[in-house]
Amino acid sequence: MSGVRHGRRGEGIRTGHQLLLLGGLVLFWLLLWGSFTPMDVLAGIGVALLATRIFELPPVQLTGRLHPGWLLAYLVRFAGEVVAGSVQVAAYALDPRRQPGTAIVEVKLVTRSDLIITLVAVTLSLVPGSLVIEVDRARSTLFLHALGVSDAAAVDRVRQRSLDTERRLLRAIGSHSEYRKVSR
Image (cartoon, rainbow, N blue to C red):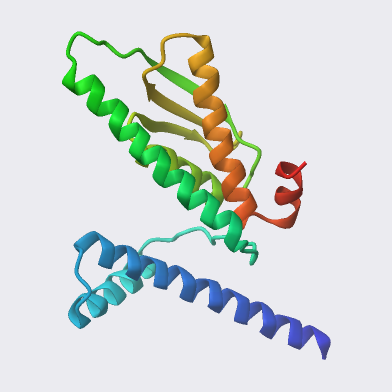
């Protein structure tokens, strides 16, 4: 009898995760179009359902853990990095005599979670002056193209900034074991 309950609970968790995924896709659709009319919501639901039915997506493993304080710290830091990166890129663009160095930086992440790896890659790519050009999922490694890198110390700063982004995400939404790894 307990096996039946466990199966139903597992189905409920999967359904909850599926609804969360669909909600996220609809929200992404609305943000993409910049409009929040009832027709846009319906179109977003249709596109989300179509996308999840046509494309076989691997199941996203959610930890069920959310720490609002760390999530806020992640978002504030991300906003600060976007502003700083924008200023840096604008300075390079406005001063043609200044040639910024560039580098491809390998960043070995702590996490094995596809969701966290993806969120770290997206976060780093949204900051002006950096772009993830390859992800080695098997090794949890990102390859990041970085602007404004002139020496080995700058490479280390880019790598550390990337690992700090991962650490903030793991503290905000990572599993309990990953949270313990980065909170030491």
